[in-house]
Amino acid sequence: MKSYSKYILSLFAALVFASCMSGEWDEPSLTESPYGNNSLTESNLISISDLKTRYANTINGGMMEEVKEPMQVKGVVTANDIQGNIYNEVAIDDGTGAFVICISQGGLFGYLPVGQEILVELKGLYIGGYGMQGEIGMPYTNASGRTYVSRMSRMVWNEHFRLIGNSDPSRVVPEEFNIQMLKDNQYMTENCGKLMVLRGVELADADGKAVFAPSDGSVTLVSNSANRALKGHNASDIVVRTSSYADFANSVMPTGRVDITGLFTRFNNTWQILLRTIDDIQPSKQ
Image 1 (tube, rainbow, N blue to C red):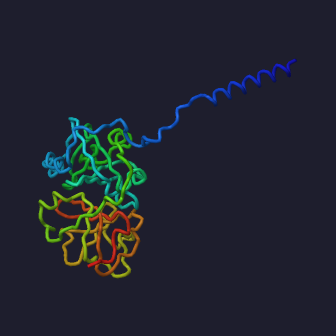
Image 2 (spheres, rainbow, N blue to C red):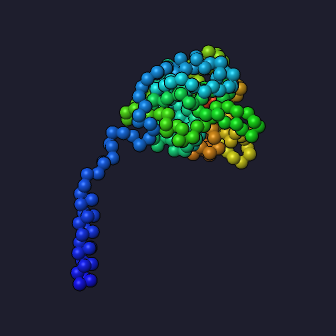
Image 3 (spheres, helix red, strand yellow):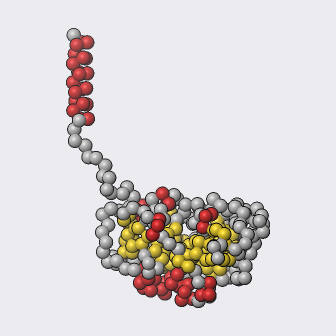
């Protein structure tokens, strides 16, 4: 009798389980991204050029300011952390200008590939300048007690952006850098943060053996990065900047004339070219 009762109970449990399994379950959405805030809608949109103008004094003064009113920018990702030379940052461009966004998260390239358009809600975030380079992020205080705009947490970032459509790398075309405007302040203000290409230049230290960012003490590293000058140009005006943590830090620098594509940022009055990948530097087509 006990065996029969156990059999009946087991059969009943199996039927209940089967009925649950055959019930209607919510299927995962195939239209909404698992990244970002899908509830964001486009409103109060401002161009990046206008954003730069509105916060020009804050950026140029090395200060920061919280955005306290609803305000959005929309742009296409032009640079990310895919090979480690750009750290905890992505750059976006909307055709009027470019801006750097600071995010305390690795592997950003996984969901923010080059060519991905995003909408960013700025209210609650901070706009500031680090070496006069415009950045979006949150306040950070370093060991010396200086506070400036820097990386926001992943959780904060996730609430402030939405992916738009699918990535399309073909829409990201680097703008030609005008070397004749190298020392023009207005040109630097308008173009810093853009993906650009500088053609027909030579790396001053390239000898067939020297690498981009050695960690053996042979090159002075500033914030774990090596600044490489270009022949015929002062290092106070323009450098190729490579992190010692970049995947290509120990790659041999190419000799001869090259075309250099990269994220053209500024540190005060110095252009700093950040290669995204080793393929951003190629033998010159000129």
